[in-house]
Length: 306
Image (cartoon, rainbow, N blue to C red; front, top):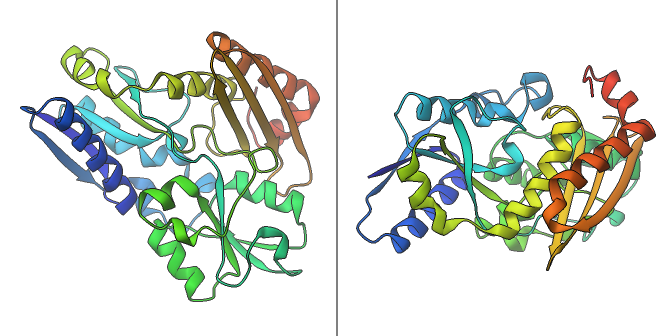
């Protein structure tokens, strides 16, 4: 038997059920059960993630369950996973990536450029806030927390003129028709790991790791090696506007990235390409270039030493 720790949100449960189905298809005699739990990130909905402690709040309880042998693995959205795992745990498999782009969702406007002056846009992400403010300083950007259904309901109740979500989450929940515009990754750089499901387990649990090996996608692993190396060199915090997205083609990789001030007053961008096998090294190199070109000052103003 394998026990999967998962958050109780509809999207997290979809991801855990997807992993369970894939595991049982690969190992027909294997019993797989879900261990749903509510994380601190799910509970603190009245404050921003950056104030509450970052996206890592969505994984800590799941990790504790594995360390205490109440679960054998945890299924995560990789954009929620900090750069470092607790001692004794490791990321063992990454699934094929979904659409990594951000989704512009609105009931009245077909695309971001159509928003009128002063329109209200909801997001919980400092990265999206920074990019929005840099692109459209006239917009009123409001905090939008909660699961996908809660966020869509607030849009439908006219609290906002538009909201930004991840294309991947909407598509996985069968809500792809709510996407009015998928934002270009060059202009609107996605979060580190956006669209990829990752699986974490105890480092010494060779049985679980062997069972999960069949799910592992090497393209996602190559992409994440570059993105997460970039993030680690930039301080590894989930509470600052850092973005990075890698595309892999054959034996080549291209990584674009940004670091921005939360108010959009300054955004530093750059990109790098090279051999896919050197993805992690390229991620670190790109981070160094960003730091040299102004990212160090931005991060320093937010209390991050890099």
